[in-house]
Length: 405
Ligand code: PMP
Image 1 (spheres, rainbow, N blue to C red):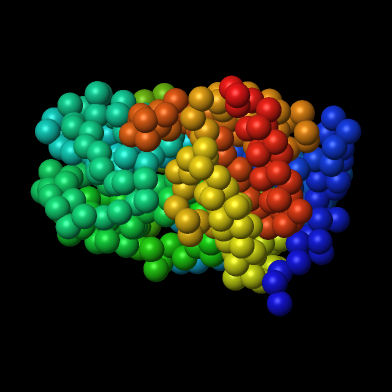
Image 2: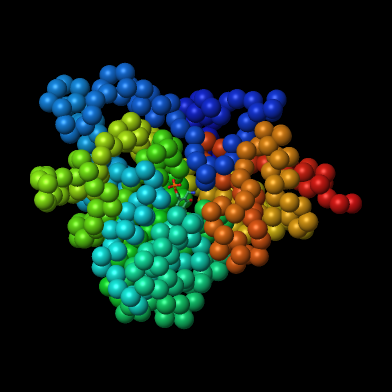
């Protein structure tokens, strides 16, 4: 029997509101997901009962806050099957996690070294590497994946003995393509490169096992997996985290400081300068618990059903161009020749349908597709078939209204 999202809807009260006198249809989940009550409650509980700074005070609130904070690290480690909780570094989000690696590895790069990314990257997994290349004289190379994520045998030549870093997204936020990670990571490892996977668009949909993936670093954001904004994770293998130069320095990340020298703390604290986002960490752990309590395969199958339904309804329409692969669990990205995506977006919004129109922080990918931007409907476990159909109906209505003839 197909998964029934109606059991989840009451857990997300924000969804049951009207938008301009229409039921809100929230299909902008790739930008950020809504948060279940358990996440909201965990944050409120923390502030009502446990609020104190962590790792510092010797009093009952501080002990409780510290315990909850470190338990959360354990929860997240379990959630992605990290071997130990010290492999989990708290960040603001995927962007900060990737920047932390790009700055942290700078001391190992030399002129002529190569940093390899794919052509499907979000700016968050492109600009930090490009800037690192500018600073060090390394060369940024781009693996030319098609929009379908096709891997051609000749791509192996992009991995050379100068490749020091290989960074790739797991799923494209702009068009939903799943990248051929396994083969790419194998090639990168054969060259001894550090490997980073941008999991920002994957964690809400796929169970993540960093041990099976076997990448050196894995980055993601809490807010795209039913958790709060302002919190994210950098997972790293021990040796990979150990070689990172701390990208920020200050309190918490030190063991001993004199005016002449500083002895850094051990992992994970060495990479976590300053007072952390404690409420975010607690909220993120609650989001992991929310997802772990679900039948993940059933959720994924449901998200596939929604995306495939939208794909199959819209791809029959001659005037719609779809950029997402047919088999995609996360989103449908499209454009309509001669109608501006912002006009489509405005009409959808006026009817209570929230989607995203734009370049999705992926300018080079948009250039590869030959468009300035796309209209993207992205799905989460709480979306219903009625919502998928409403998106299609309102979009087709918009196209009718906005067509020239
Ligand atoms: N990578 C991908 C694939 C993303 O979709 C996003 C967010 N759109 C990011 C990185 C950056 O995430 P954040 O803005 O939460 O740091």
